[in-house]
Image (tube, rainbow, N blue to C red):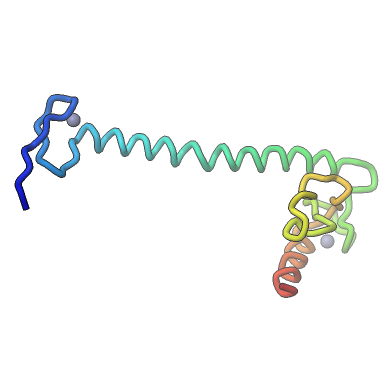
Length: 115
Ligand SMILES: [Zn+2]
Ligand SMILES: [Zn+2]
């Protein structure tokens, strides 16, 4: 293999051929950190904040304070048609009903079994 000459990085350091300069490594790391930090939060926020706000409003409407299945105090919104079957109905209120954690978990488990 021919030996390549070391290069001079834009920061002025002499970098052996094929190696990454410290300044570049740092930049890459910082870019990755920013990326890691930014992406999930933005996505999470988009989903959770909107969903939680809407779900809360929904559950505070008259007649929706109790679980549609067991009658316990409602704490979550369950979908009538599962979002797996109809992802387009996820945010459609006519596809929502009040539910509790337990029934929600039960339905999720049931749905997994049916598949
Ligand atoms: Zn450099
Ligand atoms: Zn319930």
